[in-house]
Length: 398
View 1 (cartoon, rainbow, N blue to C red):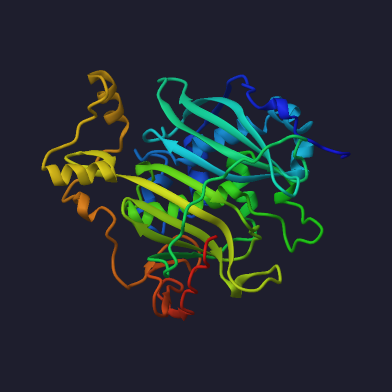
View 2 (tube, one colour; view 1 turned 90 degrees about the vertical axis):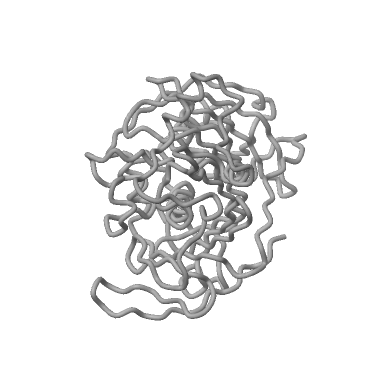
């Protein structure tokens, strides 16, 4: 490959718009690859073609990934996608969502590189910013950025570039969702996403297996958090930040998505328990760290951010979209998911979850549970339950 270096002058480059299309089947397959199942009642509507459920939020995010991986970007960044497959990694990111994703449609991605930096070990850090709009309606679906990590490719003169730092509580997690990982998970993700990077299919020297796609694991976290804190409604996701991906995940290593409730924020990390590691390491392995999610909650028939909803409750009135024009307010409210019939949780109960009883989650042997005490894990339908080991306290965050 030679001496690969990211050109310092690429900072400030704006790329041409990129369009991508998706079908309802695309969204279904992305949802299935990230833990959704017909065994989970809240997932059924998103697994049926005739459903009115929203598409998965990973649909527009995956569109941004496709825009990043195209030749126009990779040729200028590192001399081509083949080089990216050898040295490139996804380091961290932020995604803000602006309403329910359509079941099918066409998206337009606007993108640019805003910063280039380096680490003390000579690795390059590149910030790729993006916005995704619905082509037919013009509505914005997503905006955010991802920090690309390129091994040994820092340009001369590159300064430091700071990734997000999110402090994870030192106490045991408030909620944990455990999953087995299918050995073919990389194929399950690649088919709908179009990401056929060879690092996810060829076992590299020194690794026990190919690497799981980072965005697939991000989608798993979204699905788990939506199920525990938003009644399974992924359309209520407003924002997710990924602070770091400190260690690789190799299928079929099992995972635990650990969550901490901190006010209107949900913090988390994706962990491979020590007993499930296949890489020869000791202790729990953190694959995604410093996760922060925010959800919309329902109030008076509409959805809004949790912090805003708490303001509504204390003021005893409905908070309107005060800074928007009437037309913009109607368009935004129309894009939000409609509330189900019956009694709805108030703002003070928006994140309340059941107690210490197991609740089946998608995937073989997966279960949602509290972190403290013996962990009941559901077995096969109609079979006996088994007890797993207690959750290991989360490691300290630097």
